[in-house]
Image (cartoon, rainbow, N blue to C red; front, side):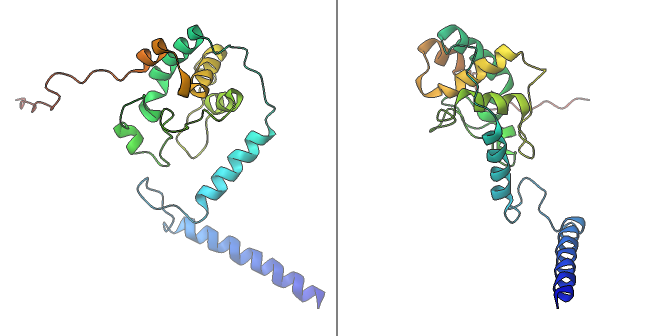
Length: 184
């Protein structure tokens, strides 16, 4: 009796693994950014990320959230992050609209102002798999990583000088695109 239960259990596991293999290998899994979510996709992705962040020890930022550091964070953010996460008062870029999952708009609503800077530091430094979020460790200095983390942690209460640095660029005069002239 026990032997039959064990064999049945093993065959059940093999059948589930074969079904998952077939689902992904047959082209039935949604892989385009415009496709609907896979079953449990968001649940598994958020669970894995949250579990990883819970394992991280909370670190105190070596960079204070003063105006000078927030300004430097704004410069790094504008150069490296704004194309996906946006600027205050601006609409999403075409790049952000084409991503899956959609990157959070860090200056709308709560953003990540409820996260400790060390959590944002980890995300900015390491990136997040299967989300389009790249890791910037080795591309930005450790100081810049902390400055950006302080910026997004304090996005709801930034000084005017920092908000001015983050202001969207003015729309070009005659913002409708001029038709291209044919080249011969």
